[in-house]
Length: 284
Image (cartoon, rainbow, N blue to C red; front, side):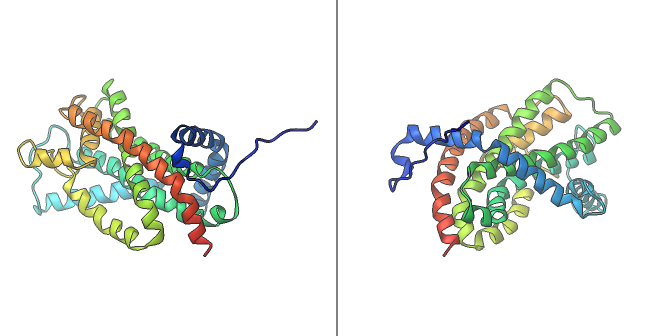
């Protein structure tokens, strides 16, 4: 029995000239690359934890260690975070877990590009599959940390409510926004190492500007900073819903959600158009 394969046509013209075909090809390649993405995801996860003594505990370690440091500094009187509606350890731990997912999402596009340079230069496959791999790894680590968070909530007597469903949506949007920002930085970041180094400097400072270790500001100019900081609305909303079942950050999160959707489409277009150029630069 003979099987026919779809014909692939190459053109010197940019795909952006035909937006309808561009989006159709993007969706088709993403769907066709799901199996490859799954196999790469399994390979990366196995390779990441295979030769470690602590295994999956390494997924717990960053938020736990950061939380312990800030709690220690708080108890030593280095800073005062004020009164909170929930236990401060649980509050900071939740913020750290969410921030870790956002930070991982920003660095993900450049990370997967560097990890699979040899594949990109030697094989033809759905480039969108690499983004699926990166997103899968972020979700995998987040789910592991969610187990830790569930145990902490049970320990401190915080019962989840139906608002958790809203928190899940906010977390998904937060990861999508982080990944989009990372995709927009990826083309220049793959050509110049300065971007990666700058991100390693900016992300910790960005974390301090985000209400993770202190309550969300309720007065100007702190409230304005919450609106302008892309990470704040989704992070605050999801944490409030997880721990308290209610939040006043619905509207800022909604506005940033409206911004994220077209920005994500722009990022995907930029990713698809820039990858051939970046692959060519890799081979020179």
